[in-house]
Length: 310
Image (cartoon, rainbow, N blue to C red; front, top):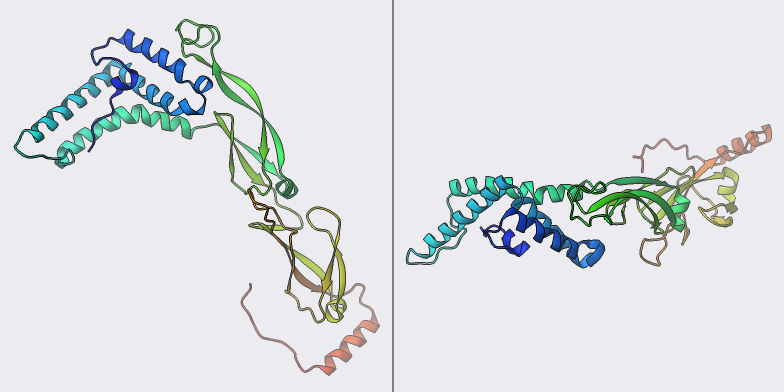
């Protein structure tokens, strides 16, 4: 097992440094590596110095951490002084269990809470129509964003604005671009401290299947039998002409290329799949009855087979 992180080295202080020295050094590094100053490149370093300070600024955690470092160093010395090289992972389970608790207490208290803060990023949900998914949209969102304290810059714990924390939560407005083809449940980052979750509303005519759209097309029985054309309104744009082949059966899928949804991040567009649903013309006249009776007399097929639903 590798040794504990060197928090003293992270902050650039001696392991005998007093609390004031550690605090001053932390503030200096925090100002230098704060993401607002250093950009995205300093974000990881900013997390590391926060983790180190959270341990070294707490007397109890620092004492446990120092004990952990001394114990690790002593065991390494014993392993290397026995006449042959022993790797640090050759510990018995009792040692590992005891030290594991220390790691959990220390790093669960620091790094663990850091991770918890990241998981607890404020989340807003936006509900989009299928039409907005197809075209993309821009959502205006106001969230609490952390900004540097311009009063004391983190130097005065009595500061009425930040109490020495160096950051202040203020409402910030963001215009979040939702790209075309975004999927249900997608999380979009908003600034550095929030995220937007996409929810897609049900559509009255279509169901989404990946990049494809699926719907049911009502076709009159005489038209399905003889073939013809229908005007159909897609999700967006003007109606299109759909050709109904001769002898079209109920359940047949008609595919309209390129009338589905865009595939996010590409130029590809899905298709519109229309499932034919046969229906009789209304009103049903007596002449219609006679024609269908005549048709029935000319065909011996009566059906009756049972099939599993698709």
